Amino acid sequence: MSVQRVCFQLQVKPARIEEYAGRHAAVWPDMLRALKETGWKNYSLFLREDGLLIGYFETESLEAARQGMAATEVNARWQAEMGEFFEDLDVGPDEGFLRLREVFNLEDQLAALDEIETIHLDSDDPTEK
Image (tube, rainbow, N blue to C red; front, side, top):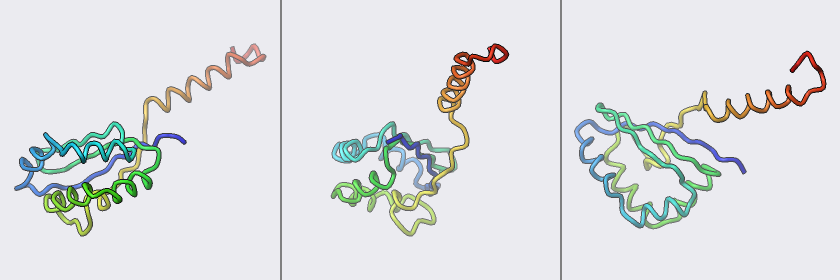
């Protein structure tokens, strides 16, 4: 199974930005372990000064990663505490984020270019070499 790259957006309430950042400076150890065990890899959050939050992670299956976290007790506690930090959110942050569409990935395009160049080099047609 290939790795899915997931990028998402949420809006942190401006009055809560510093507290939100502080909470993420030392995430609960059991939450960190649960994320790892349920397939959330290379997970980062980026916060703009106006509260725009962009998250990124890699997983084999977004649905399986979400379901795995939903089955943990620590996630229920974390989502309950984090939900109050966001604007216009009627569900938990892990369910209510806006997923962004990936339109470019350097490694994917370089791999495709390498494949095309390899095909051309292996061709018996001297005009393609």
